[in-house]
Image (cartoon, rainbow, N blue to C red):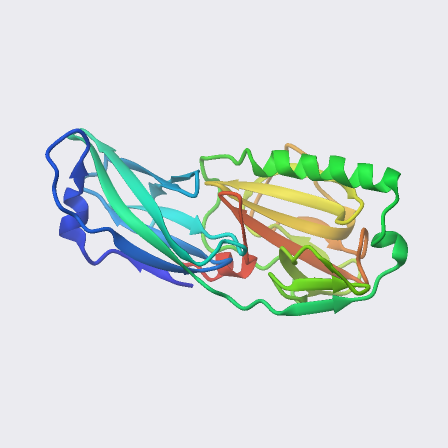
Length: 286
């Protein structure tokens, strides 16, 4: 996965002093595909500096780079439905000598996700009033979790694939179910034998478990730094809400609970609430 390393170090270190004289500094553009995550490395004047960015009304925290103490790193994710175009990404660096603004632009490039056609039992597609009420309440639970990610990171690279198997459902695909167009696929489906161990993609805290109508037996891990991963359609949940887990710890087993056509794991990821391809997390290296 793309690693953005700044080549305009001198200009970036100077930046634009907030509240001071204007220094002309053309915004530098970073190209990101829809549904992609990148790591963004920023050199700093000294190790006491901190930084925070703003992108799409989301605060983007920077953290100390484990491989290079003279720099800070942030993860930037672009939702797979984000319209193509150029968007501001302003970074404020705070240090002993005051604050400075580093203006950037993020250019979102188009991705072709394709279409998936499925046939499911009518009761899993055309919902009665009682089921619809349940689904809406469950959606609010997930929305609440996604809107309150932990800022301080608890993970270390690399992120791991939670189960080995064939990809049976690709990220971002439009879905036609029983001839009706439904919501696009927000994760990756990995076909695997029923009961196979599912591993945590990285260290973090279990923030949600439960049995849901669409997702079946499910787990959500908050890894900190604005990153969450999801594990759906399990046959067994082996963790509890509030628990801390380590990378590659067994958290559940592959199943076909919820709206599923066979044994598989639905694996999803959110970065600062952007729905992204979880494989893009795995490919990132600092």
